[in-house]
Figure 1 (cartoon, rainbow, N blue to C red):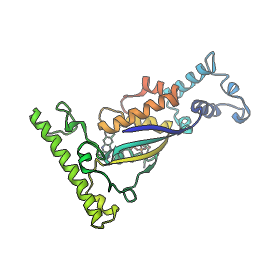
Figure 2: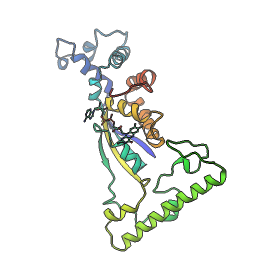
Figure 3: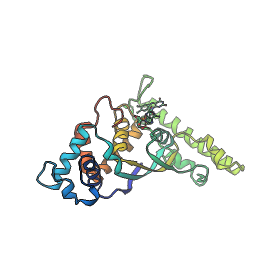
Figure 4: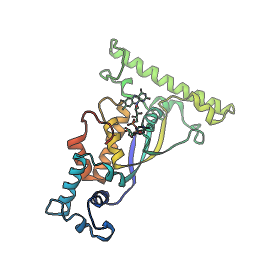
Length: 247
Ligand SMILES: Cc1cc2nc3c(=O)[nH]c(=O)nc-3n(C[C@H](O)[C@H](O)[C@H](O)COP(=O)(O)OP(=O)(O)OC[C@H]3O[C@@H](n4cnc5c(N)ncnc54)[C@H](O)[C@@H]3O)c2cc1C
């Protein structure tokens, strides 16, 4: 999996602060410099003032201003399962690589056995991995080795069948039905900073599945560079809190 920041609001925290200050100013923010907009906020420097205001907004649940800062991420090589989870978030915009137009006719099924094209969950090879609703059984080395072999055979066979169906003239949009839910997909998604915090609340949490958690942590790392004061506050005061519903 790879996650990159493609595009984002330039100086997002200036935009967030200006939007928030608009609510409490008699003057029109469009006519004011940023220094004037931030004049009444505590802090010696404009940076400190932004920190004060952003902390205050997040602390008081005034989340609307965070909707004005938007970021677009490109995600490479997540499973269709992970894609189904993240696309449940209705205020995120998506473009998902199409299996109707992209056929995997040149992928070597042996390479699939080595982990290409289909995401291999850590539990296929890690004896200590514990996932949700796992049937507890004896996890000895032989069982784990067997798990990996069963998994690799199943995905390689599925890809072989898919390619055979293409050769037999089946359209990719129908042949894809035999491909596993772990099949890799690339995706572009855009969301605002408020929604990013909401996605992180739900998907970076301990009860989320390892793959979407990994993707969300990568997004949070990028967000920390893009919108630093907001996501530093989020990390310190908000992440992993209880009763997260909709920041
Ligand atoms: C650990 C975990 C397990 C899950 N298991 C399942 C499962 O087994 N089956 C399943 O179907 N889903 C499952 N989900 C998905 C989950 O139920 C949500 O559909 C998904 O996370 C989208 O989040 P959201 O509801 O906050 O909505 P989002 O689309 O992210 O919307 C953000 C917020 O906007 C508000 N909102 C948006 N639309 C509406 C609306 N129509 N009405 C009222 N308020 C709205 C809500 O406050 C919402 O929280 C799971 C999620 C997690 C994190």
